[in-house]
Length: 413
Ligand SMILES: *Cc1c(COP(=O)(O)O)cnc(C)c1O
Ligand SMILES: [Zn+2]
Image 1 (cartoon, rainbow, N blue to C red):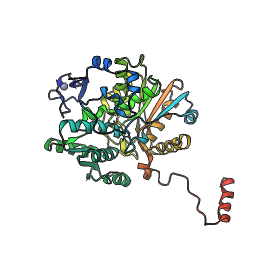
Image 2 (cartoon, helix red, strand yellow):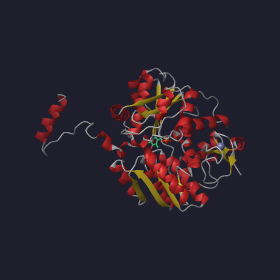
Image 3 (cartoon, rainbow, N blue to C red):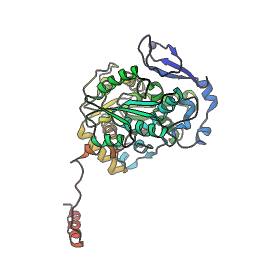
Image 4 (tube, protein in one colour):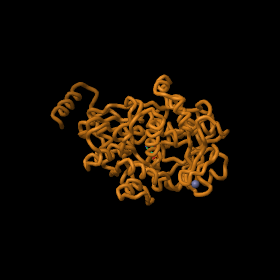
């Protein structure tokens, strides 16, 4: 019915009706939403999109819902910032930052995927939503779930930063802290999802949830004046965001919204959890799972569900991948803040540090339009910077004390 045809297995192509299912019964391949692009091409245009409210639902014909949006009415349409000062440091001609440090309401790109997932969960008639999270998803499901009136079960690994735990609890969900890493939490959640009729946004609702990531790509194209960039650098956890950004560009081309498409897609990971970038560097699609050990906890998925597809997109588009150390992540967070005034979380540090290395190695060319995706806010991961920032100046409450310090500052002490 309408612009959605159904679900389709990414491996064997078998088709399924729109239901809360996510794997193919025959080949265990992941299911993906299939659209009727011909009818969508007739239904939207640049003009129509531009006339709509500035949130992620302005692309709703390319999102897998039937009725009206039920969540995320203020989410999306974040700034695309021309980053002149940073471009100079990196030696790039034309650099833009897609700034998802300011997505409403929980300050990471996860508000995009959750908006679609919870709208779909409502359409399916669920009263409880749940997720396995590395942190940001927990915040987003907790907050959007509160707004939409769902019961919420949030599962996180015990190793998460204390501030990330508070930022979920404040919305009043049932927060389940699991003694294990993300991959173990995820496995547990698959079992729970089999037993209870809950909408696990990144398990049984995953085919719909993941489509929300496309809105980041749609916005980049629209904000560049209806053209896709020459290069885009994307941080990878499960690899889903990267594949969906590429899908968004392709869909805009397929329905005639943009003409050409020659974007190179680059992947960024932390060296302490780099199954996808390692595969790409070794020129293979075979993902070898790892045990994560990195300060970039939001990207710490050792066995990435979409790693195979992400590495294929990178290799097919002529992009490449890089991974970066904890120190490089911290240095990049500082560089971004000092040049562009944007405070990114560790995942943002990963993206910028990897971009730097990709330029140095010549994989990412200095000419053309480059977009880097900064996907989460630094106020969430302040622990990672403990002991790595400048020190404040302590003074007594009098002018003499201030001027003594001012003297030292001027002398550069
Ligand atoms: C979840 C997340 C990502 C990447 O997610 P994928 O699983 O690869 O889609 C990137 N940045 C941040 C801040 C995240 O929370
Ligand atoms: Zn199949």
